[in-house]
Length: 262
Length: 262
DNA sequence: GAGTGGTCTAGACCACTGT
DNA sequence: CAGTGGTCTAGACCACTCC
Image (cartoon, rainbow over all chains, first blue to last red; front, side, top):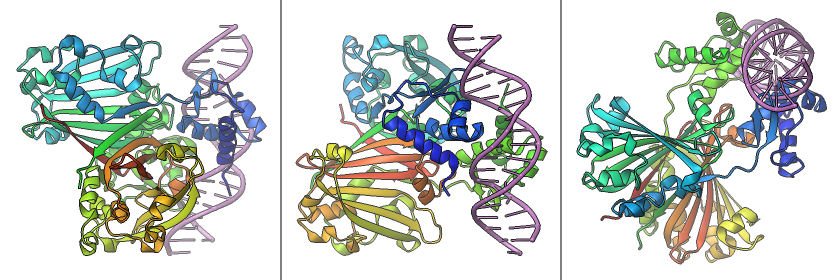
């Protein structure tokens, strides 16, 4: 009854969990494994595909299959928003001390490479609805990437949108060469007199596009977590809509909800 | 350069999005499609596998492949916690009016079938750490399922844990036949004098186990969203640890974070 | 060049569904 | 029973990595 590739996957999983296959260790070639498990190569590959989607192994084309090191999960908390707000009005040298990615990963700025690209776009239907503005309204699109200095895969893909005419009040905000802006978006918005009141985050999961898989270094079968962050200011206006794509096998989102006392 | 199965998947995706293939419509048999696209059946299946993971089609063994109706997404907000807290002390008939699943799905109680199963267990390492109690501490495990009356797949798989000796203060709380308890867990905890202060939710995504895929009616390649909810009472004690498994292709989590004013 | 995984083919046989 | 998708096999050929 049990499918063959599932039984093989189970067996390999046990070996990994029990430590008989150690992190970083290379598995035998797929042709060899197929013989060992008395099966064909495609079936063997189906079994390995399960472990791949679970993040237990890495496949490296032309090299081999490797037991994955237990991934260092990146936590992203919703407390970062209050933390950013507290720092938004601080002196520049204070804000420069740490950024949010360092806050999440525990790495220091020297380990990280940061890239920003600004572009002007027009609101499509989706964004127009989120901002409650007409379709075609001019937006400022800001794309961010943060890479570890040695590795190649990005931690997350971030794409933020602002209403162009709103942020144009401070021309510095239109210039990507001012990035990384110490203190992040809330500090930038503060320069044009905007204070945030609350943030709504919508979380879903789906398979990555091939570009996303490429940039995040995702193995086949691994999903991404998609987070749409909507920032609302004290007048109830939507001032920022950001989409964040994170690798599903390395990301943990943490949300704390405080309740009113009886 | 582009892989053949990706090109075919792209083409089918376009057809679906453009409405040339309508929701509910059956695709040709895989052997027929393979001929149409001048490829082999396994490659055709790889292409269909992409659409499957994206939730664009349903495969029904022995029947055919069907264009999926745009899934009605279930939203789960963190505002439900305050909503539940507000109702926890209300009169029974008030609390009976609606439950949280109805709140999320917009369905009424008569459309839903509810099941609860209680069981006594001992804290493993993971749960012991979450509760800050010794490994082996007696826990009450409560498993919940909610099904639509006509369909077969559950909306979510919920497993809640309470410290047995804490809730034993009210024997009614040990008896699954008292479920569904109007007003949910916060109302149950209120009967033993517990008030919640805040809730921490940790969100991750991963492939489903085969049991999860079965119960949630998931197609191959669709991930689940895993939410661990930890409830902390006004004395800082962890009183409930719940794991919620939700289908990745039909779920949207919504978290609102309110910020302190400057 | 040797060895690895990636893509694709062709086809056997099984399991499930509806008539 | 006919038709469908599910599993599995055997093997060709390509693309990548490392020596």
